[in-house]
Length: 221
Image 1 (tube, rainbow, N blue to C red):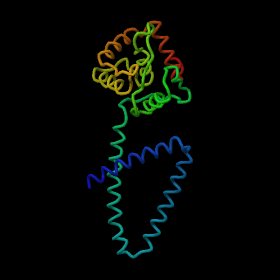
Image 2: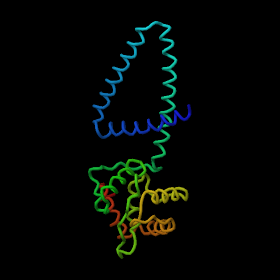
Image 3: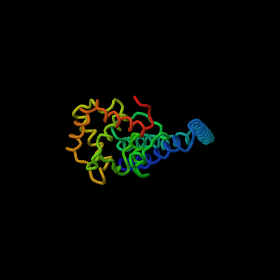
Image 4: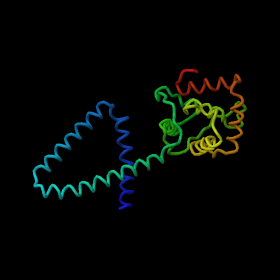
């Protein structure tokens, strides 16, 4: 029974993802809700009509498997929610207009742009984003632009992260990005973050923030 619920939960998680895509992308919200209401009403009428046409004894016998099925579906639904929750990263993102994004300015190809938009939607990437922007001397990756990106995107910013929050944020970066095709080193992130944080009032930092705001299509703060 438990294996069956887990199996059904996995299948339902896929179904929920398809349904969310249908509601958010394929169909306008008002139209999709109307379709859902009409189909649901039609199914209810068919169910009530079929039950009312049989005797009370058969109705009672039909009620048992229906209740069992409902319990299984409820259990599978919550299993599906747990599975989908595992696919989400732990940060709340500020809403930005996907139409105004200029991710090509970051050197992102189509795959990297797709994965970055997954992050914006609160989801984990399908594959790590290859971040290739370098600093002025062209000898290492530009971590500061990456920090400014998420200082703008993560609700509350990243300037006042606690020790545990920094660990979570660095892990998030290491699992979501590559630096010029190579894994990000944890000690490099810590050093770069400290340097970035204590240079926020410099002119170069302001220029980098304006650049990031242009990439994200948001008004300068």
